Amino acid sequence: MRITSKRSALWALPLGAVLLSLTLAAPAHADATTADTDQPVLSSTLTITNSDGTSSTTSSTGTLQSVRDVTPADDVNADQPAQVASRAAASPAVAGPQGTKLLCNKFYKFSDANLSYTVQHQCGGNTVPWGIKLSPAACATATGLVTEAPQHWTKNGKSQQAQSGHTVNCSYQFHGNYSGSPDGTHIAYSGVYTWRVKGNGTATLQVYGSFTATGNRCGSATSC
Figure 1 (cartoon, rainbow, N blue to C red):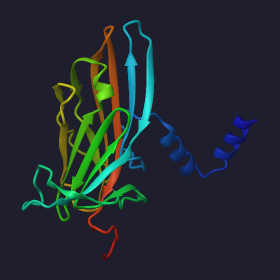
Figure 2 (cartoon, rainbow, N blue to C red; figure 1 turned 90 degrees about the horizontal axis):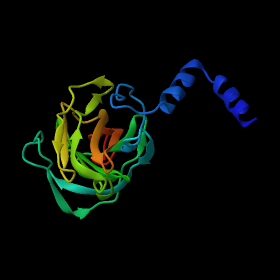
Figure 3 (cartoon, one colour; figure 1 turned 30 degrees about the vertical axis):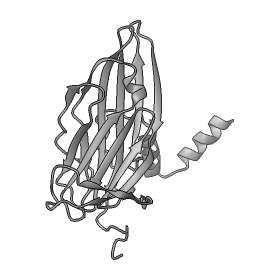
Figure 4 (cartoon, rainbow, N blue to C red; figure 1 turned 180 degrees about the horizontal axis):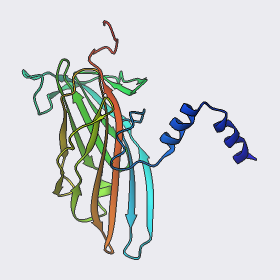
């Protein structure tokens, strides 16, 4: 009976709403950044495939761990993140029509069971530096190097050139920039990390999320 009632509710929706519901329910893939839909800032799916072909998959959604004021660099388009000020600030991030709004001149850190994702953009700047660091628990399963596939991302729904990949130690701070992204840009990203595990198995970590880099420090569209 419960299945029947759910199907009835779905087909009662307009066609556009049905398509949106199906899109949000679909599994995330490495190139699933073309749909400009709301997502958490950070989510991940970890699949461990054993040598005998069996596998296990777990999913995790990131939460905001910290947000800090940052000291803007002289060059607002600098490739490197600005220096983080020592004073922590309460999170002003709120859900909007295109995902979470991340305010300018603040350094955000989101974490889930598999990794941490950091991101910031300077007010009036044109680039959004990001960083990814795998969790100690994830690295404890690695028997060798981690391979980062080029990260795919979209800007306001349009696909951009993929970020560079690396093959490095698990403790490495993966990083890059969403360039050409002025205040108000909506960014969606997706990446894949793989490494070998004990027993000649393979771990595959999919990382994905989206947010809007707002230009006004107080979050208002007009004034503070």
